[in-house]
Each structure stands twice: as C-alpha cells, then as structure tokens.
Image (cartoon, rainbow over all chains, first blue to last red; front, side):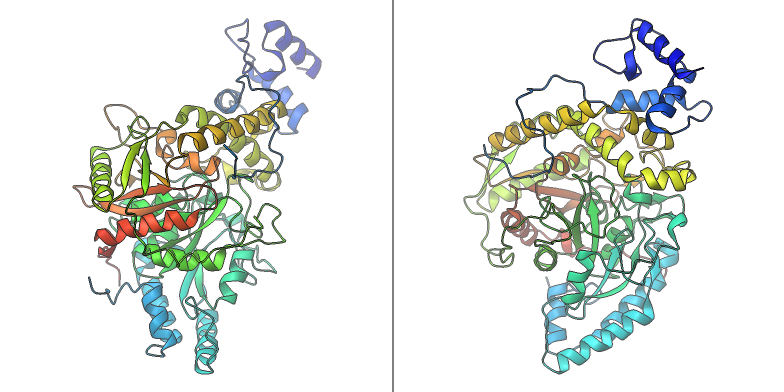
Length: 86
Length: 474
C-alpha cells in the first residue's frame, strides 16, 4: 500500500493520523490495518513493522498517549525542575 | 544491637580503616572473596575487577598510612550498576551487544566516588537497559534474591540490591526511573535512596528516561546512605540538569529524631498490596507515632493521573534514548522480559505526537503543584515501597483477588520519579514466608536531610535492618 493510500484510508475512517488513539474515537471499529500502520511507521519514524507487530504497536500507542485537555497557558517543561512554588 | 562482623556498615568500616585497625586491602579482598563465592548463587555481577581493586586498595592504605585520609568512603569496597561508565572497564547496560563498550572516562558519580577513596570491585548485573523490575536479564541471566534464590531481588538495580543484602559490599550505586533503586532495596531488605532529580549528576550514565532517571545509593543503613549521598551530590558542569544548590551536611541532623514531625499518609493511595505488606505498613505508622511524630491524612494526586502523564513522557523519552541502539541492535529488544519495553513499544513511542509530550509536561507541572499543596503541612509522606513481599520471576501473583499488573508494581515508586522528589526505602518487616518489606519516606524537593532524618529515626527504633540473609554458595 502506498503512503497516500494509507493516509487517505485513515482519514476517511476517522482515525486520522494518530492510529485511532486520538481523543476522538475512530468511526471504524476495526481501526487501521496492519499495512496502514506499517506505512505510517515507515514514513514517520523510519522503522519497519515486522509481520504481526501492528497490533502490538497500536496497543502500546493506545496505552502511552496523553490526550487529556491541559490548560494551554501552562509553560511546558523544557528543562525539568522538581522544585515548585505552591 | 552490636555490629554484625559479616555485614559491616560503611560507618563501622570507616572507623576501623582510619584508625588502621583494618586495611583496605583486606576489606576489599574479603569483598572479592565473598563476591566470587556467592556468584554462582546470586549472579549479581557482570564484571569483577579483582586486580584493579586490590591495587587501588593498596594505594588507599598507603594514603591512610601517610595521614591522607579522604573521608568515610576511603578504602571501602563498592559496586556500580553496569550502565554507569567506568573508565577502562566494560560497561554493558546489561546487554551482550555492548560487551565491547569500554568507556574512556568515568561517569561523574564514579569520579566522585573515586575522589572519595571508594574502591570499585565490579559492575553489578541489572535489568537489561535498566528497564523493568523483573531482575531477569535475558543476556546475563536471572539475578537471585539472597533471601530466597527462587525469587527476584527486584530491579532494575538488581545486582546492587543483592550484593548489599548478601554482605558483599556495603554500598552499590544504582539508578531509579520507576523504582529501580527503591524496589530492589525493599525486596532485598536494605536501604535505597532516590534523591531529588538534579541532586546527583547523570553524566556518563546510559540514558533511558531523561527527566525520570535518578542515580542513587543502596546501603545497609540510613547513615551509610547519608555518607554516600554526601559524596555523590552536587552540581556537575557535565549535566545541565544538576542543581546549583549547595549540598548540606547530611549527617548533621540525622540523629535529631522525629518528635513533632508531621508525616502524611494517603489512605486512598495505600490500597494495593499483599496483606503482609499493608500490615507491615500499619505497624510502621504506629512506630512513627510512638517516636513522637504526628501522622496525618493527606490526599495526593490520583496515581492514575500521574501514570498517564508518566507513561507518555517515559515512552517518548525512551524511544529517543534507545533510537541508536534500536537501529544498531534491534534484536536486543526481541527478548525483552515484561514489563520491559519491546520492539513494538519502541516503535510506538516514536509515533506519539509531540503535542502529547508537551501536554504531558504541562500536566506534570499541574501535578507537581497539586502534590506540593497536598503535602504543604507535612515534612514527609510515607507509603509502602513495593506492593509484593517476594517478587517471583515470570508472571506476577494475583493480589487481592485480581490480576496484579506492571502498573501496580510501580504504584508506590513511579510517582516520585515523575515528580522528581526524594524518596528512601528502609526495611520495615518481613512477610510470613520470610521476604523483606520496605517502607518509603518521600520528602520535598532537595530536602533529603529530612527524608534521611525520618528514615534514620524509624530504622533505629526497629531491628529490621540488622537481619541478614543466610546465603549458601560460599
């Protein structure tokens, strides 16, 4: 599958570029296919998906994304400092 | 209780070395003999360096004879977790693919220890890439718990915990990004300190989670932990995250007790664990009250919120830290022992959008503030260290009639890596089947002194730290 096809498939399924792990649930209950995940992984990270690994990548991604709403005025921590004023 | 001659503390040894009642070369030789004698039983070392250690010990003795005493680590045998660089000594991070990695320079913590006169006898076995708390290294084998060799010493500083508990060395330096100093300390019945993030330099340490990694000492007593921290702590130009704050005298207030100290406990947080662990915790609270402390209820930010933020940060940072390694040796991740990150986890981490990571760091600030507000009126907070008494290799046991998860395993430790706060684990009892249990004191940022004071008061009021395993193999 070409990358353009994979992206189009994900966009139309509602999964977007985020492999179904975004805060909006995908329209399709099936989620992205192994091939779609493989194309995106290759394009975005350079990694190659091994046969049968797509579901594990998807599960790990689902479990490790932080998608909750956050006050956008809070300064992100570019250099972590454990000391904090109350 | 009188000192156990088989398990001398740093403080005891230091007095004898300084007064030349014993020689470093004899102490180091004894440590090496014990290390070799127990290696088939514990598998706690990746590399032993007997010749270099004995030569170093001779030099340390010569210095003391000339009156050039460096301090309480002078001539003391120690070990170093094997992902901390040691010049001229292979540093594997627990991976056979890295056995040819011989650093040209010492890590900052090693430089400090050597300047203080400590004698490194070897590099401790560990969870591969400091990932997970299984104590099961697929490349260098299972590390065994001296209290029961069928069980894990915990991890990822597995060999460090086993060696201190087994009386091989009185100090081993490990690292902690989810509990990796404190969990083996608890499971091996020793003391483990994770200081404030930025208190000890990370320069020269195999990076795993940039904002969660913390070096820390494992010792047999709180006093020894304070001695080690005194040497390890301080700003390092090689690590921009180290604090420029002055390092206090950690021994100064150690014996002043905790009468009147306000200690927080979140009953809603301390809910997961085997019955023996939760019971030991309750008994420890009574002991703290009997020492004059006031134990008050606090409500900490929910662990689920901390975990959600921490998982995103950890996943992203590890995918960056491990990228080159993963590119060069992808097979290193094939045999990952759960809960260590697999190949799929590394790939998934690289797919997490930057906006998620940024949001997580924003929320981390929110949680820091929430924690600081919740504990504002307390000097320290206490919690168990690890929910299990005895960590089997392989799957976790069922606990409280449900599956015990990897998230449960770090329930009492990971939060304080994420928040960067100092936390120490001290022995607080034993399970009915003979496994040590740990009690954790958590303090405010850069207030290790109060953490050590509270832990020392508790330790001295109990005898748990005086119990030692009987290890066969010698």
